[in-house]
Length: 107
Length: 122
Image 1 (cartoon, each protein chain N blue to C red):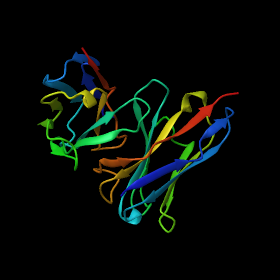
Image 2 (cartoon, one colour):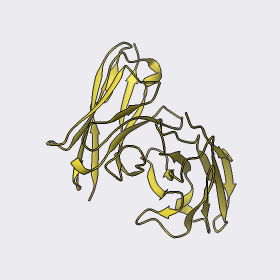
Image 3 (cartoon, each protein chain N blue to C red):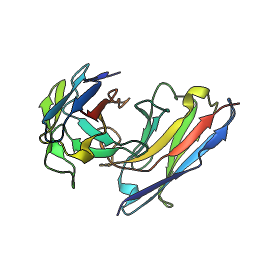
């Protein structure tokens, strides 16, 4: 099974900050990497697919990059509504594993 | 507008069974893979199972293999998860998610339902 490791597990930042979350796969995943945002009590929301493609309707301050086994999610200028938990997921091969999540909190 | 509405959750005793449903609308259900993802209370997301658009290919996490069965009825635009031999560790909110292509493999999830809570307890 492919293991997905996110870092950091939690992060404190302020409105307007630029933040980066990292996701590492235990083996190559052909850029089949997605990022999701989840707020408390809500369903996950798709942000990024294919490592760097922005899901329709997602603000352009969100971006994804990386290839091979190392990937990043960047939020260029944090907005109040961005404080949430973020997950990466590989969908290259079953089981389609998620990272453990990164909780982004207000500083 | 894509809508995914899960139902069928509830309280069940260990060793019991439950069938979850996910009613889909707003897209051509028969053209897209579908999946189930769960989240135990206070924990992260765990992928459970996926099925191709035709239903011909199915995939399972090791933790549920042999106990859970994913299926779909394309005529009813509905996804199912039959859960047998339930354990306390199966307690979670279960989400259905729409794949972005025909195939379960290589298909990211672009829309999610609101989830249904399954509680396994005596």
